Length: 140
Image (cartoon, rainbow, N blue to C red; front, side, top):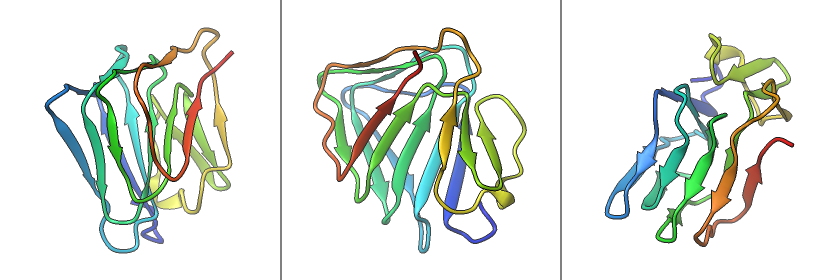
C-alpha cells in the first residue's frame, strides 16, 4: 500500500476469471486506486465478473495481454484500466510488471505507462466493458 493509503497493490503470477467466477477486489476506506500486476508469461483470460468493493478505480497490468470474453462484466464504482505496459509511472517511481517495487512511494494517480517490450501482448475485447471510464492501453 502507498504510504498515504490511497493506492493498493497486488502481484499475481497469472490472472483468469471463468464465466461463472467472480474476482472481488476489496478496496477499504480511503483506497482510491487498486493496481494488480501479472508477472507470468500468459495472457489473462477474463470471462466472468470483475468487482471492486469500496470506491476505488481498478488497474490491471499484464504485458502478455488480455482476452475479455463475451460474458465479462464489470461491477466497479470507479474507472477500469487494462494495459499491456511493463510499467505504470507515478511522479515518485514505477510500478513494474517484473521489477521490485517500493509501494510506499507510489502515491497519487498514475502519470503514464511505459512499454519496454518491442512486442507487447494484445488486448482483445469480445464483451461489453461498462464502467465510469474504460481504458484499454496496449503498445504499438
